[in-house]
Every structure is written in structure tokens, then in C-alpha cells.
Image (tube, rainbow over all chains, first blue to last red; front, side, top):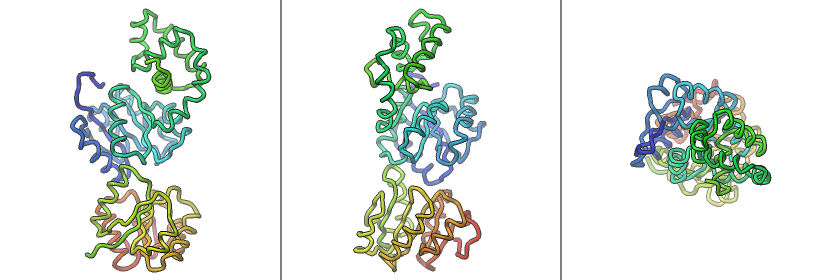
Length: 209
Length: 136
């Protein structure tokens, strides 16, 4: 897990295209606060667990259908790792698929080197990142329904936006785990979301955080 | 090797910057980078090399290659693709492409492949399959 006090972010890259892998590693390793923990053409769960990465960057273009399984395998080996999906598509649908599969971030291959670095830093500090060109599209539905959230649900959404787990939210608001889960389920239903990352982006964009 | 004036067509961004460095190693001098093919530019400039990374590979790719060939008959046309499909590659060669390089190749292979295409006029990455062209 990324420690708030840690100054280094360890990134593991899963990218089958050698040139693209080198471009990612070269761009990130040029930053003083980023270390490349390793890279692989395909997922090797053993490598993921030994790399002790804070963030895994995964290319989803080769096999989008397997993305959920790949993310699940990464999380089994490194439960607290943040997963950033890399795609050539500026597509809200693919971004939704990635986030629903458990990704914490979504970036598009046409971003500048500076934006790539920003995305990694945002994943470290905020726990999520979505391409700004897509996050606004994704939130249109949520914005229309946001006023339906109860004050307590808005509190929970705000704390999700701060990257807290259900247990931590329960501690902050003096609620049981079960009650927090119910609030989270209600937020998902009201905003028509399927992932905490969407709630986090919603909270950020709507000034809750 | 003398530098070859090259028109690069690819998605801009951090990867394009790295790709340019690799192409320079192969002796290519990038004249211009566009996200989409500017046929008028190709017609006027007739670059020695056209290095094209198509967005979405399909039957239409061969049509675009044919159009490029008409615009600039002497250019060496290189396709850079993640689409490893023999028949698709064959259709591109038939349409006038000189080289099909895949994104699963290392930078050393890319450089070697471009040099082969420039030297003998044709190159296909071995991953694409059985094609009547030479691999580096």
C-alpha cells in the first residue's frame, strides 16, 4: 500500500508492446519520485507480488475481455495496489468497463509525457485518475441525480473521494460496516455507478472533497 | 546511412516522442507528424518514407495504402501495427506497402526492419506469417 509519507511511487508496467513499455518506463523513471518496479509483456502473478508496486499500469488493448480477470489476479497478489488501465481509445464505454473491472485509473495513449506523470501522481495521492476528457462524460448522468443523495450519503461519497475504505468511513462517521455498505449501495444505485472510483470522481467534481 | 525524409502518421503523445527517437536510429528524419494522413501533403512533398501507425486496421487500410501510393509513387510505405494478421498484411502489400512492422517487435527489430525495407524495398515482421517478403 502507498504510504502517505512515502516519497517514491513504485510502478509496475504490464505492456506487450516493447516500444510502448520502454516509452512508459523512460517517461516515468525520469521523475525523481517514481521508480519502475518492473515490467512484463504479460501478467505474471509471481512477478506482481514480488515487485511490491504501488501502481500497476496495464494495457487493455490486447485483450479487453480478460481485463477483469487480470485485475483480479493482480489484487489477489497485491491487495492494495492501484491499477491504471492504458488504452488507445478515448472511449467512455471502455473506461467504464475498466473501472467496473476494478481499475483505479484510466489513461489514453495519446496523452503527453507530463499528463502520464500527472496520472501516476494522482493515483498515488488521490487513489484514482480518469482522463479528464472522459470523466466529464461519465459523470453527466451522476450530476443529474446527485441531488438525490441524502446528507449521510454525501458524507460517505466525500470520504470515498478521500480514498477511505468502508471500515475507515465507518470509523469516521461512527457507523457499522454494514450501514456503510448500505449507504455505498444506495449511492451506486442513485448515481447509476458500478465502482467506487466513479463515486470518488463524482465527489471531487461536485466539490464534496 | 543518409537520413531519409519521413512523414510520420501516428497518435501524438508520450509514445510518439519515443517512436521518433527509434525512427531516428533507423536513419529517418521526421519532416512532419500527423494523427491522420494528409494526402495533399504527401502529394506535394513526396517524402522518401511514409511511416504510418493506423488507428484501426481493416480492409480500408489497403485502400489508404493504395491512395498513398498514387500520391507518392516513389515513397517507401511502412505500416506499424498491432494487427498480426497474414491476409490483412498481404492486402496491404498488394496495395503498395513496402513494409509491415509489428508493435510486438523490439526497437532493434524495428530499426533493422526499416533498414531492410529501405535497402531492398520490402520487409515483413516474422510474426505476421508466411509472406513472400524478407524478414530481417
